[in-house]
Image (cartoon, rainbow, N blue to C red; front, side, top):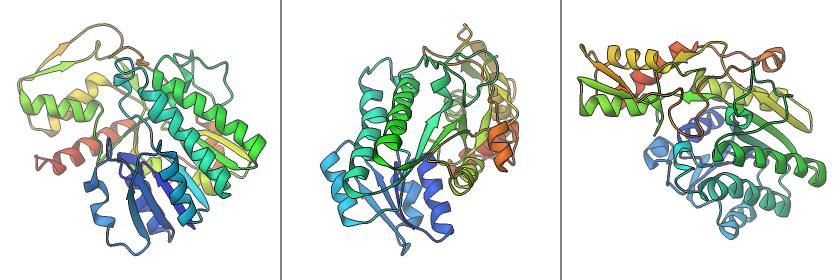
Length: 317
């Protein structure tokens, strides 16, 4: 297939491009490089079935020009604001980069007859839900601007399926870790310990506890659901049946960096920032019944992510 990946130079988007090319597809990656990195796709530049276009997805004329030049069978819409903490500081950030990018993609799909969309959503749409988060739970009340913009995007995709005849897969990601990440707890802890190897500031009380999914497991799950779920509107949690505390992540980073006598300092409170959901658990029976499970546990995903980041930086592994 000829496939468009928005956010294709990003952390997850670049891994997705790798996997799609490995299975024989043609990939066009769009990215404005505000969060993505050219280095993430440098190894693909000479690939005969890959092209990269630097473009802001909110540039709807430029986006529709891309659709006009190529006939895409499927769009994997990965582009969004990836810095959830920045949302309260820039109130239009998630409106523009998370919701309006989705709207622009949908309009160009309709204009050019592209009938298949895979959308990267998030656990943040659930807000602070009691008990395991199920795909059919509701009503949903996000507590971050990021989660709100993703949920609004899901609603528009649902309406587009009903009114415009497309087929869609909505995939709700947990915390994703691994090589090429540009932010997140592993990234932040390594930065802080590189600057001061004797002291680590940890946001919250360190007891925040979430499932962490290794990026290659996520990509495997995305492609499995895309190929295996056949409804007009498909929606799945993708995750792992284990979790890791923030304090445990700090301990793994310290261990992998071969540091000793590191003092942990906690900022206090039950969460890291406004809009953070300090702990959650996915209900994964729907995707398990389809036939997919993550290969690595949450702790294994963290270890792989730390090792990959240190290798990238030339650190010790």
